[in-house]
Length: 251
Image 1: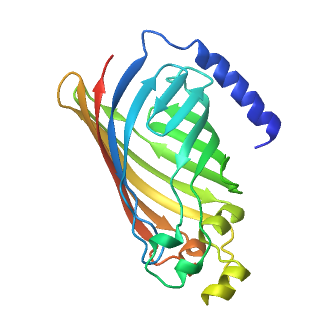
Image 2: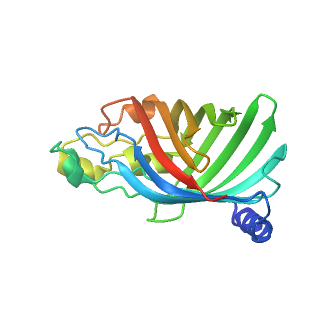
Image 3: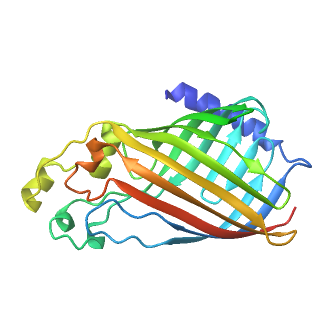
């Protein structure tokens, strides 16, 4: 994703978003609890609990830890979406009980700037996305292709999803690699994972408890590629994550 492309996307999407508030705007607020187990050996994961403010218009949205701007209205057949989202993937040597991993460098979270193409068809939404971390000096590209089908009724809805997430070699080195210096002080083998990612399948949904109060949740199952699963830092190739939340819908 070149610098000119990013600047053009930002300018176009933000210009449209500035004038997008309309009768179709939806606003809600609530709280969200998410759990995503770390793939690292003997490393505990604390649940993430955050208050959320959600705004959705034709050209702009803000949901939880993600904000985005659409080039076309949200129901358009073809769309370009510029987004920023919080990527919680990290490794803190203070969180592990493994004596060797505790001697490795810290790997920080990041905010990811991404550009996505979406195609809305009668059989669901197809999306191709590419992004890069813009904080904490995290190098490398992130990509994702996915299919999602929304089944929405008056009081409830469910959306199954399947896809593949890709990390460039630089990003995988940051998250799962072991440098020569780390290997020397920890006793682990140096490791360069190369580019790889994971397959995922999941579903999200909601139930309206009242006209204004919404219960929502989701689960996702992931399967890491061998290049990641073979890292000396990793002790599992599969994982299940999920979230549960509640919103009050203002309008």
